[in-house]
Length: 533
Ligand SMILES: Cc1cc2nc3c(=O)[nH]c(=O)nc-3n(C[C@H](O)[C@H](O)[C@H](O)COP(=O)(O)OP(=O)(O)OC[C@H]3O[C@@H](n4cnc5c(N)ncnc54)[C@H](O)[C@@H]3O)c2cc1C
Image 1 (cartoon, rainbow, N blue to C red):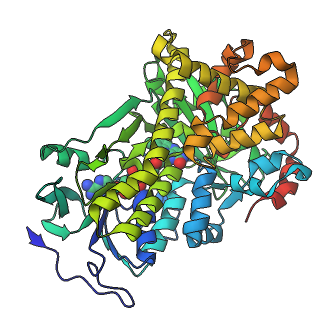
Image 2: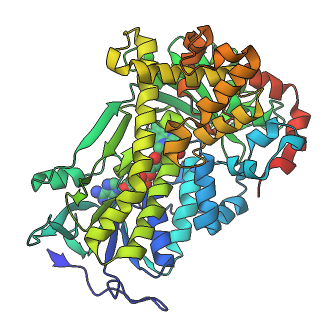
Image 3: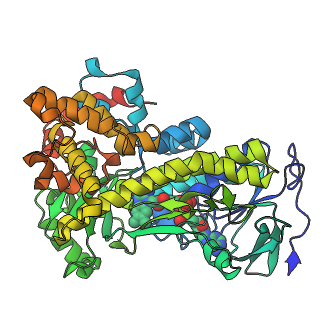
């Protein structure tokens, strides 16, 4: 295969490959684009290999006009957690500016729901972006396309890696082969090709094993987007707070940009009849039968943007490229969903993709061209984050699975399930009424803070025990408190598994929130000052 032709030197930037080493990024979606931006802006030119070109007409609605075969979840609803917004604000503020210029809103529902006299400056960290995924991705893509240090090979499909042996260590990746016969030489390849990245398969073919933890989410999503009709009087803010259960599973509302909103029906794939939900008529019939949802899908309220979007085969997945400090391969870093992905219902994927992207870029800046030090430094900053979100998402999924299937909790999982019950009880019982508990809950669902602390630590549980103690006296304050509330159905309701990131989050499964908001549209409108800029 031929090497790529001479690279174009970029004005004001070192040519690719000198003096930092050549860097190739496989995949130009959320992780790949953020990594590319961060590296290019720190003076490391990169080459991005991406199969899907940008939309032919960037001014058209990308939800409708951008064919994106490489991202199957492209048109499914996304709620972007506050961590995603905070990372963009810190590391790529012009992407946020581009979103704002396109009319995308930033909403802080926590501040919306509590009186201003209780606000603290740190509450600004709970601000979410309300955008459809294609709109957010297009902002990243257009920003990256305009960045001088980023060269796109697109459309281009990667078909393999090349390797060089190293005398005493793991094999070293030397570049990426493309379907059209070209070869992109690289000293470092960043695998940003998503959860279904072909890279582990290519490594396996070379006898390189990447240990992988996988737990099926046991969910299938059936979703549909709508746009508000002019004059629709439904309280727009409240769509992101709508969620609940229906006979086939649970359902959740999403707020989008440009007057759009969506609902996803989240079902266990084994439930009889769920496959029928892929048909518009069946989906609408199921949605219409849910009293809180029915008004939103009424033809008078909104116009559908598309047919039903389906996503099955969702998995929690964590790949381990380092064992005992030894990388399986050097010159290759997994970033984004290629490293770790979690049940989409929790709304953490994009924030974590950005987390890994900026961690990888920082490690490159600090350690390239020392590939071993680079692999270790990246692992040191990303592993604890990935382990925490994987562990928590998998545990929440098991809690839901035990509840839905009626399988008894095995002894080895008992302590974790008791912990999950306690978290659910805390959420169901108090996040709306206790501001500190609400803050702890928002840190959790929005990943505001180190993941190991906000998910695995005692942040929320400590607040829950304090709130319980205040409400019911010292007896309720024992670590093993598992009273009726902790074990009742509310404790394991959709709150446990709902994508709470785009709602006030403390109210999963509690439709009365929607009623509260719905009763106060003037308050919703009057709280615009609560939006962080
Ligand atoms: C149903 C569903 C709903 C979700 N909802 C949410 C949500 O509400 N909130 C949230 O934060 N996250 C959500 N996520 C997760 C989120 O979509 C992912 O975490 C995010 O897209 C990961 O970004 P990434 O760049 O790592 O990978 P991806 O977005 O998967 O991108 C991979 C890229 O690699 C390219 N590629 C792959 N192979 C090749 C190849 N051989 N050659 C060239 N290019 C290639 C693809 O074209 C694509 O551009 C959801 C996921 C699913 C499945």
